[in-house]
Image (cartoon, rainbow, N blue to C red):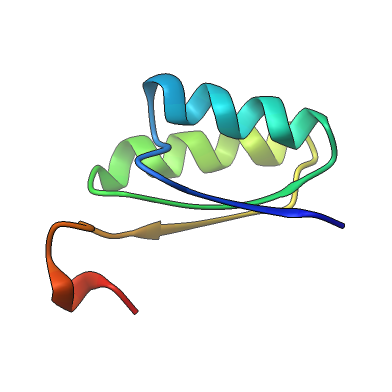
Length: 66
């Protein structure tokens, strides 16, 4: 299984990219500063039977990067 990691994937182009690659069979790991939108995006991916992981992260803050 291939894995795609995306930052800022809770909405817009990032979310569409996650959905596109999930349909192609990729596992998706994504983060976003918007926790609510991230949870909604994760639920959408799970409804597609995708393997997905969401992490609430602000990539502009070094302390948020694990």
